[in-house]
Amino acid sequence: MTNQTGGGTKPALIERDRSHLIHPLHNSLHQAGGHVWVKGEGAVLTEADGKEYLDGLAGLWNVFAGHGRQELVSAAARQMETLAYCSGYAGSSNPRAIELAERLAGLTYPSINRFFFTSGGGESTETAFKIARYYWKLKGHPEKTKVISRQWGYHGVTLAAMSATGIASYWPMFEPRVPGFIHIPSPYPYRYQASAGVSPGLAAADELEKAILKEGAETVAMFLAEPVQGAGGVIVPPDDYFPRIRQICDKYSVLFVSDEVITGFGRTGKMFGLEHWGVEPDLICFAKAITSGYFPFGGVGINDQVAQVFEAADKIWMHAYTYSAHPVGCAVALAMLDCIEREDFVGQARDKGKLLLRTLKQALGGHPQVGEVRGLGLMCAIEYVKNKATKEEFSPEEKVGARVHAAAQERGLFSRLRGDVFCLAPPVVISPAQIERIASIMKDATEAVLGCG
Ligand SMILES: Cc1ncc(COP(=O)(O)O)c(C=O)c1O
Image (cartoon, rainbow, N blue to C red; front, top):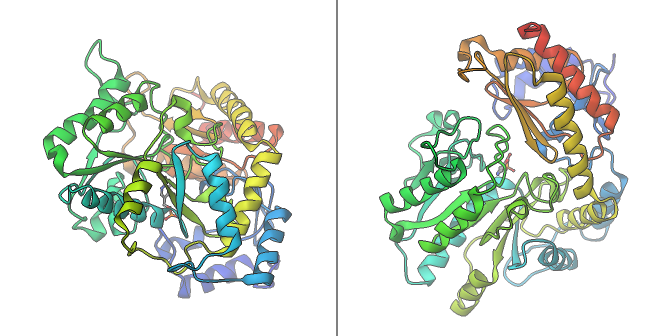
């Protein structure tokens, strides 16, 4: 079948792709089994050969509103026609950026009221590091530069962001990592081992205190954490984890930076992730759902205390991206905020997330190789294990996750993995019938690879 863009058949496109494209997280030798996507509608993606797939990860966790949303397209087109680009540097602004910052001040955590815009998550992470360093310099503590983050955290892969990312497979090709980045264990309820009688959430949070004391509080600038760890395998912390983290950050004067690149704007069933635990960060990083992937966009929000210190300094903020406060990105973000409010995306994510988790648990919870089915809002994961009783993992050579992923694709579901953890985060417009279909595909794919148990 000819591709809808007129580019040729899927095999021909793949061959041309292999000749000239370098893909993220890939080696072109494996591109023969790749996909060429040509269309998206709601929660469905279509390939160049006409085959349809449920978009199990909403692109890369970002296409929250689903594909083919005309409001987002029109907002971009209108803005491109009026003013496709203008500088955001040194006093230049644009009405869409001003409006967006005002709206975000009303939507984000109450103390967060100032925003720096970027083109995505990694740029937001880098910006947060610079804000933290500059803040502590202004406060008279130039030696507070270190960043503590967590195992299985994902914060992007620019060099410093990669150094904060706690998934070790991203490091070896590019080491040495940037000095001064420290990882503590993740509050991974399925795997974190606390001493007997100790709350695992508090024990995992106390790992932060231990790390701060080991490094010296006078050297630690910030703690960086996703409210729910996404790419690391949808790790939902225990309820007592983040309140204790906030206390520790306050006790040792460490900025608490919430990486809401996946959790921001409703995916967990709250507008921002830490709202689940009544905790406020000092900074937030966001991207992805703010434009639903229709335009590369992100940002960092800072609290009033940090903003006051910056303002009092009366210095030029020597940090910049050509596309910071891009008017088209801001226009798409504003249209997306309209969708979120008008269609109650936050409530939909909460309710559909419950349905997804329930149907996945019903379909897979009893399988002997499914160690855990977990999630919060529209973020879920299935963790496959060799031995359910001991939680022993499969050896990487068995490629269990990859085989289940292949079997799910054959049945029309596309998503991503972390090892043997299968992640699911579909667009919020997914229908209940499509959610049931995801669960049924996952059951069939699991049984095809691992038997019925
Ligand atoms: C929590 C989190 N932070 C940061 C990033 C990096 O974003 P980007 O790929 O836009 O640089 C990601 C990407 O998946 C992410 O999930």
